[in-house]
Amino acid sequence: MTSDSSKALARNFIDGRWSDAGTPFDVVAPYNGQVVSRALEASSAMVDEAVEAAARAKAAMAAMPGYERAAVLRRVQTAILERLEEIAVAITRETGKVLRDTREEVRRASETIGLCAEEAIRIQGDHLPLDGSAAGAGKLAMMLRFPVGVVGAIVPFNAPFNLTCHKLGPAFAAGNAVVLKSAPEAPSCARLAIELFADAGAPSGAVNLLHGRTPVGEALVRNPKVNFITFTGSSRGGAAVRQAAGMRRVLLELGGLGPNIVHADADLERAARMTALHGTRLAGQSCISVQNLFVHRSVLGRFLDLHVPVVREMVLGDPLDAKTDVGPVINEAAAERIEAWLREAEAAGAKILCGGKRRGAFVEPTVITDVTDSMKVVCQEIFGPVIVVRAYDDFDEPIRWINSTEFGLNCGVFTASIATAFEAIRRIECGGVIINGTSTFRPDQVPYGGIKNSGLGREGPHHAILEMTEQKLVVFSN
Image 1 (cartoon, rainbow, N blue to C red):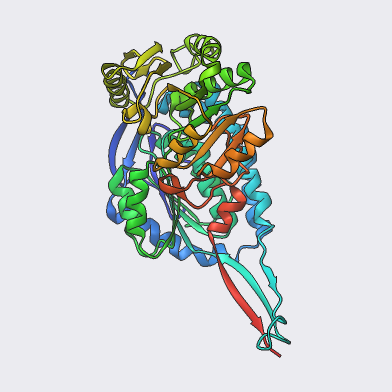
Image 2 (cartoon, one colour; image 1 turned 120 degrees about the horizontal axis):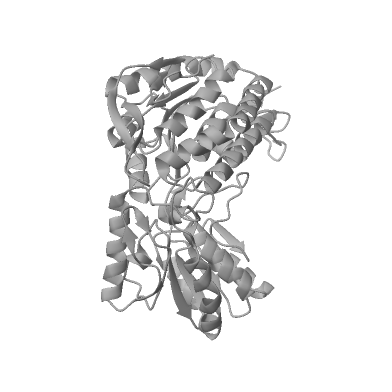
């Protein structure tokens, strides 16, 4: 067994071994401020050591047959389900996400790894017909895919286990070696994922783990032996990663403004309930959480009568309590920022219909209206349980606003009209349009990502593997 026996301390994992080196730091529970775990922050030398280990392992990983990589991944998938409760509780303690949601995150992570196992034996190239030109006639050409080599992966706190699996799974399935930097708010979650890979038979150096804050990620991105970088986080962080990467390829999953549109002909009961749940779930800490909610003025009153009671009835409390719907945000500083944005909006004329108060790291599920485009609750990613309801008269209005922003992740559109749906699909500038569903829709097999400042490339096992492989032209001449 290569399991880390030091359960109270999240150590770094380099070249198949758990390391006692690094600077200790505490992880504080958002719920009550108590220390729930500790981790060892990697030094810059340890970052280089981990990258060197991955660089040494990349040839062995590239040579490992797809069926063997798939077998490792299937063992990881099984182990995730066997340790579901342990992993879910660890996520809840470190991040404050309610246990109901973290159990679902772990189940999704198992599916993510299972999908990666399937894809590991399906990586294929293309035959290129050459007889369309005199120069190509009589020759055989094909495009083949090969691993990029060393993947540097950086994950956030808001889905620390499943997003870790979205980095490790495709990279391993494609035949790459990986250096993962955990979220400093949730190091135990990454430790558990790496432990499962190591116990499942991942070769030494194939998966490596580093804990720490921004400087650790910066050192990882700067290292020239990292061939590919996959990052999930803020748009500002993504821009820094892209700049530091230079000519190397990146996969960036970044922020958004959670636009959703409820048209006059929508099923109001369905739309009201779904947007209420998906704007407050995970305490709103998702880049695709419902934030800017456009409702046709002719149905606004009826919509709010259905929507606000659902938000108001959300139970705020202990994330380990099964009765709790919404837990705290990640820390008190984040809660204070959200509260300040709400007070600023109120002072400028906005109206809070429910919620709006803060207690420690808890922010009440909130519905706010009568806003203007310049308010921070509107034009910046709030990352909290706040839904901004905005009236519109013509369908063109929300589309023009969405397209004018710097973000373009997912957009939900509720309508009974095929014509309206296709207008949204054609005109809205974003990575995904969800008809009669919210912006939060993301099953793990779909190609997921944004445009503009919401990201580059697409995640999801199949599409991430395409990102994490290089294409090579092969020609046979007679």
